[in-house]
Image (cartoon, rainbow, N blue to C red; front, side, top):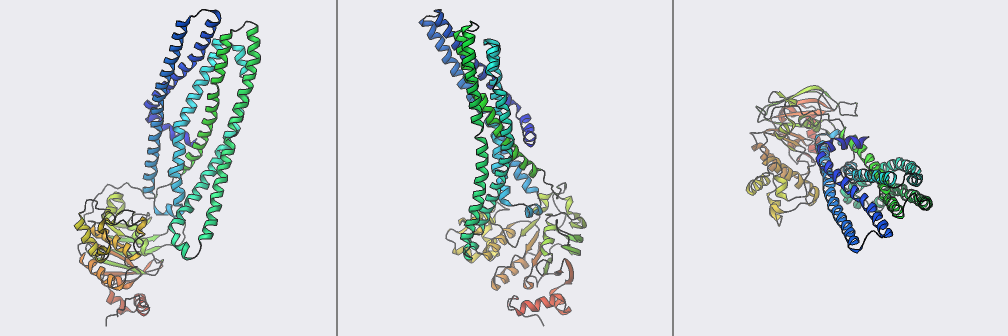
Length: 583
């Protein structure tokens, strides 16, 4: 069972807390067994005239003392047991998040974020409940059941106990049938919740687009269908779980009827006393909790099993990037690329092939080409987001795999085409990689990224909250904030993936001057606009994953090849920012 595998290691680690909780449960169970037995003795003593009023008060005081002791012990085991189960929830969430950070982008291309969010919340909650209430129900219910049966059979009357217990095997069979179906229905409910969660996230992210295209009504209809599917799946779970109670009541009702008939007969025969019959009846009432606990335990464990299977499936996802390197610093920011061939998972066409490139420290290299030519793929390989099976990538003459992943990526200041900004202040977003940066350093980085005029227009300056994903900023502003983040970083290598795609001509020129001033850093600029790389020390032109031309801007124009044609096209359509080719 997936749930058992998840719980065993945790139970072994926290066995002290669980053992103390079980010991407290055992003490509660023993005290609970003493109450009906003591009540029966009091009744027999009253019936036979063997107890006076002071003795009756002493007996009542004993009952009160036992009740108080049970209260203290119940508080103790709840603190121990549920405290441990909450720690399991924290441990699972930590493990889930750690696993997420190690998985490569290919995994996220195949998985929906809403489904992952559902697994990290509802699924872990179900396992946490199984570790707390599930263990409680199973141990407490089983303990109470065993103790009650021992008291009924050994202490009071075995024949009466055997007659009263006849309905219980049928109840166990009914529980088994119900539990097996609950697990299947709850698995479907979790899957429907993932669908609903994923759709909700997509709708929130694309709300503007939906409004622009008048798709709100269609989106509401689709959401309603998914919500209804989730509700139906939940209804099936609740409908099946509701069958536990009738089974319990039928079994206990039958047992009570058998006790009344057989108990009266045994009392009239003189086999048991009135007090013993009273004690037996009280013990029978105490069987209500073990029966309900059994049903509740099976319900919780089946829910936990369904959730644990989904979590185990995620935890067993293969990590394609191994983090076995030991180097933490590169001797120099020199990069050498020798890619024989690279193909994305689930694809049959190489994204890059036969690419040779050497980038000396402090040099700026531009990578240009049409959409899908492999520009961003090169960046991803340098970041080790995907493994390279055919070829070699080195940094400072050392293979990338020789570096620890966190150390390798800390050597890059990476600015993606669609940068991610957090729902924090502007200053916190810029200082993400340098959290102890001063406000003055942050302002200088923003000024260098041509965000100075925008900063002055913000009423709260660096303390301006920019909303989720930087929703209060334009696309160009988000790119410049991300560029400021990279400029503030001490990383020796700049990786700019179409960073200037959303800025105007004036801003682009200002940013290019900033990048020219970053001569102490190695810089790799990926762009579909040639104006962004015209001043680079070296330009690589990619087409269908292959380098068709390499050289400086002027040499490539003079060659009259693919680069020159792209330049003329961009000049003709205005994408060259109105500049003319040098003569």
